[in-house]
View 1 (tube, one colour):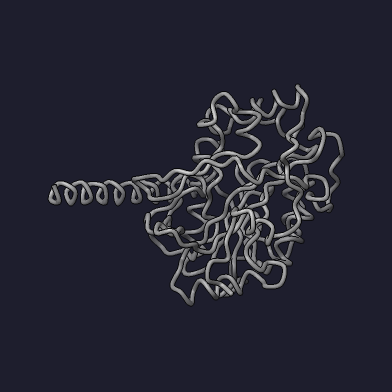
View 2 (view 1 turned 120 degrees about the vertical axis):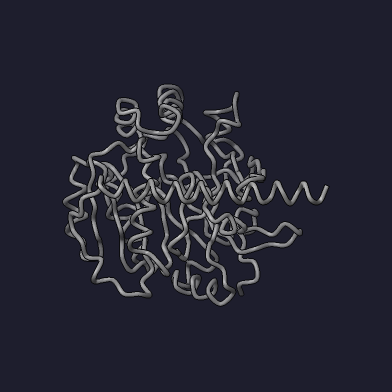
Length: 343
C-alpha cells in the first residue's frame, strides 16, 4: 500500500511539473500580445514591493485604488490595460510609479489575464514581493492600520515564508447596489460597508493542496440554488516570486504547490488577510452591460449573468445578518483572517 501511494505521489509530481512547464511556456508565448506603453521597470529597485493588475475601463476606480496602495507601501505598479477606452490608459501613463502594458488581445484566451500576469512576474518580479489584485480588491492584513506592507513582507522573510493568503470578502451597501452613485476618488467602503460574517464553505484541493472557499452574499443570493457554482473566494495574492513560479487559476492557486500551503492542518492558526471586494457599487450596471456583450469572463460570463439578474430584480445583497465593517481586528474576531504568531 505504501509503495502504491509513493507511485501515485511520484505520478502527481510529474504531472504538476509538466503542467507548470506548459503554463510558463504559454506565458512566454503570450508576451507577444503585450506592448509596453510606458516602461519604467528600470527605475525600480531590487527590494521594491510590486503590485500587478489587469484592467479594462476602470478610470473611475483608479484614483482611490492608487491612493490606498501607495499608503500601504507599494513601490511600483505593473498594470496591463486590456483595451480601455474610458481614459484609464491616459491616467495610468501619467502616474510616475506605473509601468504600463497594453493589449487588445482576448482576455479569455489569455486564461482571463493570468497568462499576461505570469509573464510580467517571470520577467520583472524575480526575487521580489509582488501583490496581484484586481482594481476592485483592497488588501487588508494584520496591523495594516499601523504597519506598512513591508513590515508584513519582512516578517514573512524572517520565517522563510514566500506566500500569504487572503479571503475575498464581498462588500455591499444597505439597499440597492446602484442606489448611490460612486464618484472617482471616494472611499468605496463609505458606500459598500457591509459584508457576510458567516456562510462560508471550505474544502481542500487534494492535487494542488490549496483551500477552496465559497460563500458570502453571491452564494447566498445569486447562486442559492447551485452554491457549488458560486465564485471561489480563496486567493494567494502576495508572493515572493521565483523564476519557476506560476499562477494556475487566477490567484487561487500556484505551482509549485508548496506555495499553496498557507494554512495549519493541525488545528493552529497561520497569519492570513482579506481582500475587501468593492465590486458592488453603482458602477456595476455599466460593467455588467459591457461584459455581457464581450463574453470574455469565466464560464461564458456566468457571474455577470447572475449580476444582471440581481440588478433587474431587487438589486440588494444586504440582509438582517449583514455585518457593518469596522477594521481588520473585527475580521480577525469573526475568524475571516488571523494574525497567527505575528505580534
